[in-house]
Amino acid sequence: MSETTPSSYLTIRFEGPEIKPGRMRLDDFVQAAKEFSVCAKRVALALHQTPSTAKGRRADEVVTALSLDLVGFTHGSPAAVAYLERSPGQSLMEPFEQDLGELTYKTLVEGIDSVANGGDALPQGFDLGVLMKLRDMGKLFGKGVTSMKFTLNHRAKPVVAIYDQAKCQRIRDRISKPEAQLQTITGRLEMADFKETCRALRIHPPVGLPVECTFPESLSTEVKECITQHVKVSGRMEYKPSGEPHNLEITDIEPIEVTVECESSNSTVPWTYGFWENPTAEEYANRQGVKPIQDFSTIFGAGKDEDWDGFEDELKKWRTERTAE
Image (cartoon, rainbow, N blue to C red):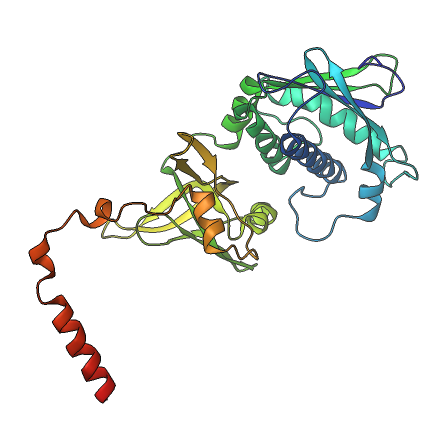
């Protein structure tokens, strides 16, 4: 089967050093598919003149119109290619009076190229929420993927876009335009308040006191998705007269992975866990690469015999006193 066969509505071709012919890591494919699906939903809402990060449930019509089925996964030597077809039961949506799914995917694929080619104006159907999800999808470029090629075969001339590290960096630059007093901090997002009068959150960095932050309505969905996770936030910092940080007005928020050094393999591995997960002490140790102590002298030193003089007498005395009580 050719990756541009007209019978396949959409193909996604993955290339990179970690991609084998018709083979890639499941977690990487799931991440790419998830972020692409969210991008499509946000484009559809932007086309429908609704902010793509607006709170509330997505309309059932949007979900139905954009639904795709995975119908094949094969090689495109030396790449891996996913074949996607539209799901049954897809319908029209007002006020377009046309196929919302077709319009959305055409807008998204065409926009991937144009949004990264410079210029201040965003393509039709694109807003901050769409850019953020494209940026998140670009995290695969640090995991052995070098490019993703999207081919939409719904017309005589396919719509094609290639997404790579260079385009991802240009999208990152568009999200974080240089501004005066712009600062970036990392930490765990422990608290968020979504009141319209004051949308606020608190970041707990690895060292130092928590940082109070405020965020706009346009970032509400991103903040909800990041609660209890480690994040990187950027924005304008306000300072107290004493010079201490007072409040960070967030312009961007991004979830990040926490990594630890694993001595057994001399490599950095992700250490993550769900909010409701309750790992055992052994599971925590395994995730952090911690092993049982084989020689306690590595902690306390070898010690000397005289260091223990009188220890047994004091221990007996202490036990006697405790029993008398």
